[in-house]
Image 1 (cartoon, rainbow, N blue to C red):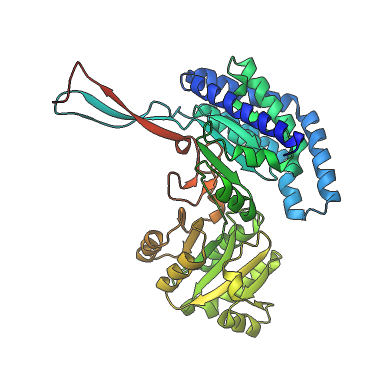
Image 2 (cartoon, one colour):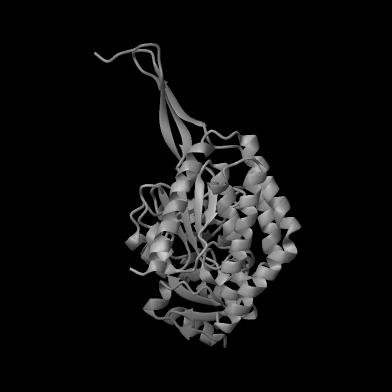
Length: 427
């Protein structure tokens, strides 16, 4: 092992140890003091916008020189929208109720003592993420509000931006009288730091990776710490036979095109055979006007060819591909049951939607699709912690244990039992 690797191992281990100490202190911090730190952070971001943009420019220049694709470059940019969303998210999280201490259930034992189940912090949470620097702020404030310490490991492509944001987080903690080690950013690009972090189950209780499938699979394979995963966002829209065509067009275009590079953008469109000939050409023209490349099964391609609408033939691989681009796969299905079976087979348990005016069909779909978020006549683009009223999100889990879907404050909590009595003994 090299000297550098030994130094990195020592650095990350000490960060984890200090994070554990900070997490124990955070468990008893008053809500008002946590909110003060979060609002102070928002002030610091506003006060340091110019210097933050300067650091972000270093990352953008390096990314362009390294040939990063345009969609990833967009996610890296500290835009006006990203800055305003960070500020809005911080203010919203500060206004949200503190989840800690909430009574989940309680009952009296036959001998008279009270057994109460209450929310508590998880402890120390490690978040490993790529590209988007807003994740640094989202994770720091959500972990703080929920009483957790956080250790952040951002992608090398956003290193300068993340370091600058992390310094502001530390300053906000100090200005508010909170432990400076309650949120820490690993200050190296070396992969050895990640390898070390994943083995520190003595100090960390949870790892949340946010990024591409390669990163998440690496973390899942190598972590000694429980991992909350989100592999892909293979989201599907199903246009049922009772769809409202104009409404469906609007929802389909929004789900695919509003921001195609994100995990809640649609990748597949299924359409019932009874309305395919009438509705599909109208839907396809709207998608083509928005710059979408279409890939269809034999039936949908035949329908579109007859209308002189360009459509490539889809392959088996397309149905399970997360494009993160202006590409959409289309398939004509015989029934809602076929649509549900398709989604449960090819989907990633993320977000899927039915477009229909039939409430019975909608309920069949909502109950039958095994995904973390299911929609009825609503764009899949709403699967987001901010949109769900969480202020921000720590990630979107496609697992079932212990959290599922957009993860906000409550999903960053565990629970404990408080048992209160007056001298009862077991006989």
